[in-house]
Length: 293
Image (cartoon, rainbow, N blue to C red; front, side, top):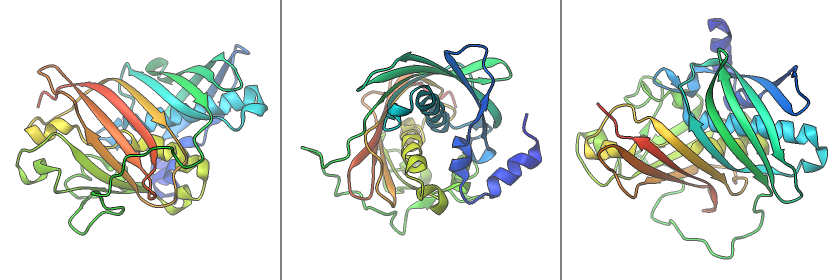
C-alpha cells in the first residue's frame, strides 16, 4: 500500500486529477484481462472513503487504456456510459483495476472493470465505449437561470470550511455550492435539489482527456438531495449509471442535482453537468439508501 508520505506528495501536485488517471500496467495471467495499478489520494474522499464519481472516472480510464492497447485503431473512442455497482467503500491509497473486454466494434465496444483493494472487488462497472458528440446539438434545453461561474454568495469547499471538512475534493479542485438552493446550510428545509460549480486545477484542465474524465467524475459531486428535507448522514449508493456526452469547454462546470422521489428506504438522484457554453457534457442517475442520521 502507498505510504502516508506518498499520499501527502500526491496532494501537493498541481495536477491532482491527472494522478488519479496515471495508471501503471501490471502483469496479467490472461491475454483477455488488463490489470492496472492506480493511486487515489486522500483529497478524493468524502469523509474517510473514496468519492464514488472519482472511482467511476478512474475505472473508465483504465477500461479505455486497455481497449486502446487491445486495438490502437479505437483510440478515438471514449467511455460514453458506465453502470457501477458499489460492493464496498475503498480507502484512499493503491487500488487495482481489472479490465475484461466483452465486445469490440466500430461503433460500440463493451468492457467490464473491477476496482480491487486488498484482494477484494469493491466496485464493479460495465462500460460502454463509443464516439462523443463533437458538433452543435439539434436541440438543447437552456439553463440561463444558473450563472456560468459561482456568484459571490456561493459557499466554497476550501480546507477548513464547513463543507470542506467532509468533502475533501475542494483541496484538489475549485468547488462551490449554491446557497440559495442548499437550504440545509442555513438549517432550513426546501426543495430536494442542489446546484454546484466545479473546475479542475489549471494543469488538469490543459489535458482534454483529463478534463473529459473530470467531467465524468463531476456527475457525482452533489451532496445527497434529502439534506434539504433534514435527512443527513451517509447515503450509500446502490447503483449509479453515468453518461459522458462530449468533452467540456474550458472553464467552470455547472452541476444540477434533482430527484423524482424520496421514499422511506431509497431515493433517486440525477446529476446534469453543463460546461461554460451550456452544453451537456455528463449526466448520471443513481439509486441510494436514505441517510440514517
